Image (cartoon, rainbow, N blue to C red; front, side, top):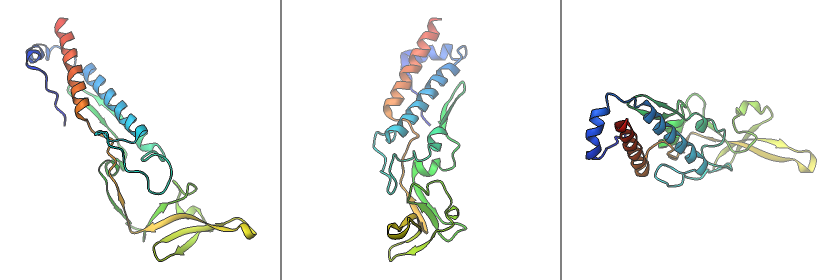
Length: 193
């Protein structure tokens, strides 16, 4: 939780006007700004600390932007005392902090490695079959005809996969300072009324 500290000279004003001022407008401004900054992190592939996210291992594109569901799930909420930004996406915590996923009911995780297999179940590819190599097992299918016939690799099978942390939620020191200034200005205006 982030706590805004207001300078001493303003603290007296805050104490006098705090019970008389509707702070929801202040919290909405802060929450909307936080949400915009989180959305910006998805576009720029950086964390709150400014460090770039780990690149994607197999597919092309930006990290966490394959379907856009995670970035679109970011929402903000404000009360009189809180500015909240978060998501109800069940994978958000794993991507924000990193972790390991393991196969549960199936024998292995099916990890898409072809754009044709992203977001689809391996069962949709009826003509697919297993290809075992010394290093990995794949789900593939034959495409083309005659001399142009070749294997198209759709999925790699793994017992577990490590997901690297790509933090998108959080407040850095520059944001803390910005919100402190916004709060100070808000209370100065309230005191003048």
